[in-house]
Image (tube, rainbow, N blue to C red; front, side):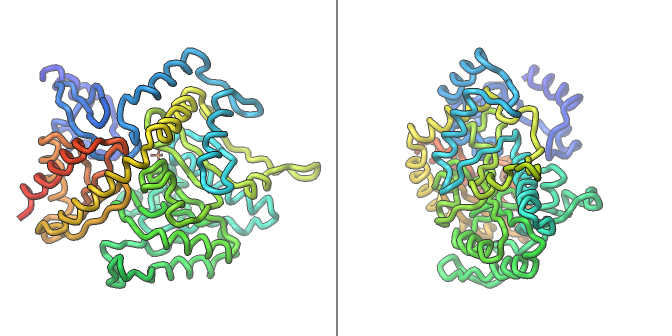
Length: 442
Ligand SMILES: Cc1ncc(COP(=O)(O)O)c(C=O)c1O
């Protein structure tokens, strides 16, 4: 206890936390995690807490996954870093082949970055340079969904502007054209999933058709807009979007950073829509969440547009020091093997049923506005009349006290457990989640 207090004091003296209000942090007795194992985070007092949000949605294979740790250990002793500009190394060759094998359709060209935001930056730049290389430099703008989240670099913020977070930088960012969010909790067309006719897609259709001459690409988070509040929406939207982009000569980028690697119930969410994007951004679950590595996976059509000839240099002059880092690559190779060997998607099927049933039930708790679930993603909203965001924070606090770590997004509470969570741990998470709702709601 004394050790934890000392650590908290040191923490607030030096560590600048992301997405954290300083005063609230200073007044809180925030957890200090020392170890983690499977679906449990273990703090400095030895308390075990279920990781209900997979540590910002990336620890898909649970914590301290043995094969990944062993791969990192082995690679650390062989090659820690080696540049990939104009040369290569064995791990990145192995990983690129693996990604090409599991990626949908003809996505076989892998460009590496570190964080998710960097892969989105790369994808945006590839799409703009693609048209430049094709002799159409006027196609340089992006279309995204209102409420979309694609990362926190200034380029990415331009894709997902939210005034509460970004007002202070509004004057320096380049905003995309935004289309209406497919916001099923608050469907403007009063539809239920059973009779949804995707009227919200008309806004995207208008944005694309009216601006196609100046648009390089549309970028969206497929089937779930995560950070804005886990807005799960029908895969049919993505299928329609593919067709629309094709008809209007616009590239389609799917940001699978959060939903890729099994979260949606398929390896990649685009599979639910039965389509292949021109580029897909991946990150988070790529290394099983262990090390920062992200990538843009592109089709030959895109890659081939970057070949120079004697007259024209079409090279993609973009890169990061750690593009294709061997230790992260080793972790990713091991993670992909585990997804396949341990049949993680079968476990997701089991979790998906449990989450869907439970969240359907939670909808009947007074104060819960709506709920939704797909694959290993589930969320519900606390109604404004019942305290909205403030109440969600109280529920969060109760849940942590009972041993389940969640972190609401405004009035939205969600469970995104590791994809390898066992039945008993899942039952425990759902029990704590439900008890915490009931304890705090009328
Ligand atoms: C859909 C999506 N895109 C991009 C990002 C940014 O990834 P990173 O935080 O690794 O930069 C996130 C992060 O949550 C995300 O959910």
